[in-house]
Image 1 (cartoon, rainbow, N blue to C red):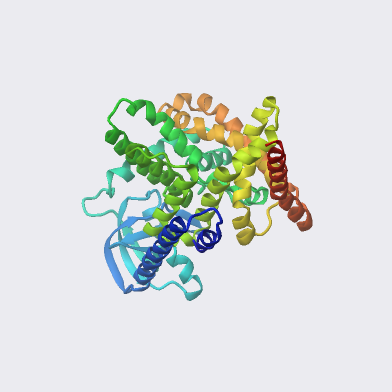
Image 2 (image 1 turned 60 degrees about the vertical axis):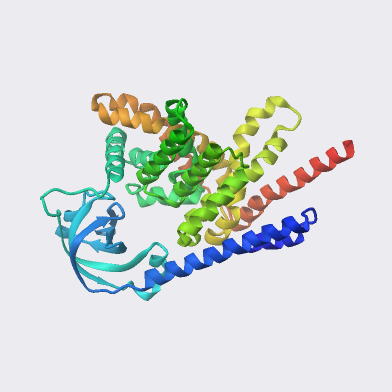
Length: 442
């Protein structure tokens, strides 16, 4: 936002009146974000600790953590992290996010060196658990129908994916609905090394498929009915995919577009992205500390800003290169978008990351496209599961094979820097040359 203020002050083509109103709006947004951020920090720091014996709601799915199980619990609106072992872990294993359990234990502060990292995830303390049990009534309750239906769908898709091998199933669930909890450390490492780890984060492609399926069903409905159903479906899908930052961004942009369409506004893609970022950072200022949020927003920025330029460069004056441009442009644009964040957080990416993405991303997209309906049918009719999941398993194995080969290639750091820098430099220089030629023709 500070960059925006500088741009507004220096932009030569912007009138003083427009410049002043835009700068005022930016300052107002900065003030609101600062106020919300202060309120959130105050909230996570003002917590009293002590003994608890109450019904808690699972704020995350239980996941392996060393020899134990880690889970985040919501108690009276506050989140606490627990790591449990042995019989206590058995009391919560098999539970899903949104379900309720009775917990007995004692809360305490997070160690100082981990406190800030926990707080930006809205975790206000740790809980030493003495026992987990079902709530009163003898059956495990669900907090809302929203979580119940989402968990049921995840269970059906998981059954369908179980027809694959263990590694294929773990990668499939990551690609389709962002569940990478069953992926081995070796798989996670090779996807990071190859620059393909982002494929296990739910993106706009998944949301786009949801809206593609939904649109024919509501096309003849009234404007506000269409908007209500669309927003409800997006919220449900976010819960299905565990409200990760990438799906919040993707669903948020879809929601902004749906609202704009309902009120008759036709915003540009960059305006939709900007409004989405502002709204959700106001709702949850801690998103500003999420690397996943920054990567998702930066990747979207790259797609919006750089795709037309790269498409024009690759296509040139030959229409027969359009398909080649359609394949290359989005992947390169997204990689350019995330490059500053990636370099700042993880260091320079591997020189093989771009070709690996060009080979793996389109196939991963196809797996995402057919994955949900195929897994749902396979999970509902186990006798057909192996046949139905055969083609998706081929796609999953291709993506994994690309990651495996790319991870074995370990270019020197200098080559990584040179190759990664050449891509944006080539785009900028080529675009300037094209504009210069066009200006001379004019």
